[in-house]
Every structure is written in C-alpha cells, then in structure tokens.
Amino acid sequence: MPRVPAVIMKAAREFLGLSQEDVEAVFGMSRKTIQRVEKGVDVSEHYVAALQRFYEDQGITFVSPADGNGWGMFNANTSDNMQSLNKLENIPVAKRKRDRRTKL
Image (cartoon, rainbow, N blue to C red; front, side, top):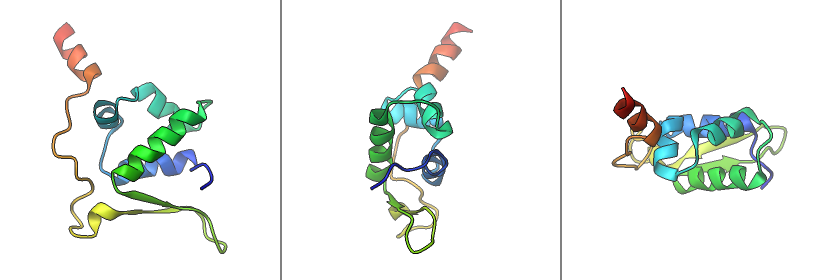
C-alpha cells in the first residue's frame, strides 16, 4: 500500500475517537512525532508506518485511491455498534498531562 497521506492519518486517529495524548499514552509514540506525521512534516518513514500499523491494529482499514476515487477508510469497530469507535477499555493518563499536574 502506498504511504497514507498526513490528512488521512489524522482522520484515522479522529475516527477512532482518540486524541494525540491518547495515542501517546497507549502506543508510546510522542505527541510531537504524532503531530509531525499528521502535518506531513519531515519525519522518518518508520514512524509513519508504525503509526499506520497501530491504527490498523485498532480497527482502521485504509483504502488506497482507485477508479478515480480518493483515499478512504473503514472503522471495523463501528460494524456492531455505531457508537463504538474503538475497543480500548482504559486509556492511561498521558505522561505529559500527569507530569504537568504534579508540577503545579
């Protein structure tokens, strides 16, 4: 599959109902790196591929452009329940948020 465009990566995260802080807490990739991927800023292909795999593991299927149609995606989590965007039960408080609270 070709590299998923930055705007589609951001849409995938949002389609899962996750914030950048949630992805940081669950997946372990820094929020700064997630931001760079979503903005299409110079970032290693390794990080883009890893984040794409994470979204796929969470239920996102990316659809490459074909027959004159652009990029698309499906969220398998919504097949049983349209209100369920992801299957993550407990999203830990992001480290950066916790650090800010303890410093106050």
